Amino acid sequence: MPDFNPQPNETITIGGQDYTVAPHPAVPAFAFGQEGRKAYVFQLVTGGEKYALKKFKPAYRVPELVTVNDELAQFARWRGLEVANRRCLTADTYSDVLATYPDLEYAVLMPWITGSTWYDLVIAMTPLTRLEALTFATGMVDVLAGLEEAGLAHCDIAAANVIINPTTGQVHLIDIEDIYAPGFQPPAALPAGTDGYAHKTSSGGQWGPHADRFAGAVITAEMLAWHDQRIRKASEEEHYFKASEMQQDTADYRLMLEVLGAVDERLAELFTQAWESETLADAPGMRAWQEVLQEVQHREKVASVASSWRPIVPGGGQPEQPEAEEETPQPEPPAPQPAQQPPVVQTPMPPPAAPAPVVVDAGDEGGPVVEWRPLSMSAPPPPSGTGASEDENGTDQQAAAGETITPPRTPKVEFEPLQIDPLLNARTPEGTPDLQEVPDDELAHDYDDVGRLMQDEGPWDPIEEEPVIEEAAAPPPPEVIMPAVDELPVELEPEDAGEPLIAPQLDYNDIDRLGRPHLVWTTSYGAEAYLLQEAKSPKFDNPREFTIEATGDTTWNPPLPRSGRLFYRIKAVAPGRESAWSEVVGVRVGER
Image 1 (tube, one colour):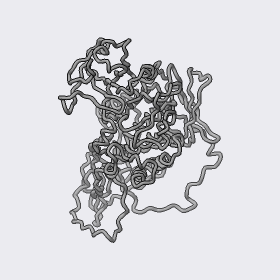
Image 2 (cartoon, one colour):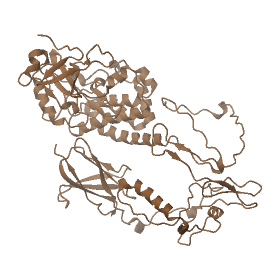
Image 3 (cartoon, one colour):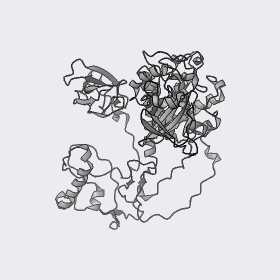
Image 4 (cartoon, one colour):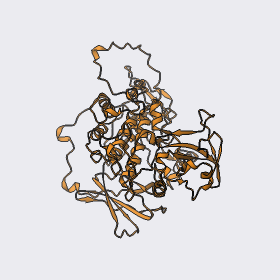
């Protein structure tokens, strides 16, 4: 009988369902298939859905694959392990296809994962931006940290076994037949690692809860540093490190530390600890990588949103233009000496008639700011003593001859009648504007606009407030006067430090694919930690308690999946103080 070596658009019947072999997108004359170390993988299509048919090579075509397939089914909903949703072809259940192609015995039919393997990106020398590199690396450690916290390990992390979806940034693991889990039987041939990712002890077999620590650190470092052109040029064909230089102090290792340290020094320290580890257990856990990368990625996203912000320049001057950003960020070179730089010759420009508004554009990378125009400001008084004012429509007007507009100073917070700002008097000489003079239809329009913006946040009741004088755009004082030493703030007295903390507001963000609720809460000023309780009843009988340090990240999710109805509450704590409990938040997690 013929072996299964399909042609494009050929039809194959599996379990009574017809599947079509997909043509290769680059070479339509060939079937869409790939060869791995253990098997061949073909793309099949039926009903608009894509599947992967994995045909094992004869040496790996063993009956234990049936048991492994049944054991993996319990992880089908885990993030990164989508290929665990699979069917193993045996003569008892799929005799129709095996009667035609006997070499498909113990083959596996599973979902097709969209994306590219890290192997494909490495051999193609695909450049990444700094943020893309961070996103891929964070997705990698999220998957590995989830496995490790549950006591699992892939046991053969390598570039060819990791698929990245560039659209979502999610990472998926394939070739999971040798996965370690408590109670699983070890495979007949223990995984020994892959060149470029193997620990010095891997040749004796790596199958246990710490099996992914070293290879996970290496592939995470590759992803993080791939935005640097020097890393891409120095890489081996299929990976960055050569098999002969693993865990050696080489030029490639020192370059990797340099690039990682430029992203965050803690990443270089984690990689050094893994690189110098004597055993797999000595390498840092993936949770340590996850904590650092989540913080770094958040910082990079904030920086990308605000990258095109321009400051207000009092007096209508033009803001200083930022330096052009390089396409591929490099570590900062030593600062050049001023004496070595030629003098910058600037052509004097005539002073503008009116200060131009500064417009901030969010740029191609998006962000919350589409266009922002600050409060128009008057230029400093000219020597003649004449000033300029601005009407409520933003039109600059010359002030009366001889009138000088004094820049407002920051008012002290005291319980005394509101002092009218001189700048406001220049606009409305009569004094404070009367709210009753504003047409009713304009007020209603304003309230409608706010109401529409707040629809997703819940009901909102407009509250009439006194007019607020915007002082953020005012020119700074002409000089900075430092307070005397005896006027500096003093530490709180013990009786002041004993004031109760404000109770945080608790909510849940979402429930991930593993069935883990992700909780968020507001910051309580002065808190050193938060005490979170989880219970199966709103009375919190025998609750589980979790202490989260107040490090600025007010989020939490359990390492293991949950199911059923759960209730949560949280309070802020500090030495000798604590807040009241927050309102109870109830979630329902579907049975797994």
